[in-house]
Image (tube, rainbow, N blue to C red; front, side):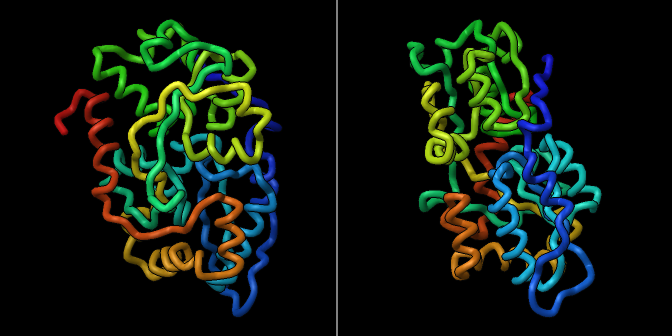
Length: 290
């Protein structure tokens, strides 16, 4: 696959600026910094959202928080495993794939459930009713470690003896769900695989982009991208407090503002078994026993 690389201006400009911001916590601050990694699962192009998230976490945790962003899921996952991040909002795919080295922290709740879907999308006026109608397309994926933006489609093709490279005429990674929508809407791609949560939020915040596309297929409901810790730190005092800060967010006025901007109901603890269907898709694509 030949990756499509959007310009820096198109990917997370606000997040990059925020990472350099000084701590803005209140109360008795601690000197040790908590580094929280974010991927394109979070709406990281919104500077006000990031500032409010940082402020909420610093106030509740009583110590500085640095928001760390990278272009790919692999970069954030690697930083988390190596101990260069204390926590990260990742995807269910890397959580399951690296389950011996990662631990589930908290799961977002969207529209009353800790679940979301993967969407196949195409241009607004095109007639297509399912994946089989997209054969031969130029297809945009989000990230090779994305459940909704790669794995779901790859698993669906595996089930019928196909693979993305054989089924589509060409594929590329857009490095972000918003970029998948832009690629399809602009005609750079004929179709794409995208996070349904991000797509639905964009329907509210960027309707001019969404209206150029349409949903071909929504997948089954799958566990929402989680906040995770390195397994070695999962029972640490920091992890306990960070998990509590997330799960109590809906009970805090500032936290509710952040959740409102994210269009989430809150965060809650779940058993890792909720990611079983994603594990099954990984096993299928890799040709492994479940």
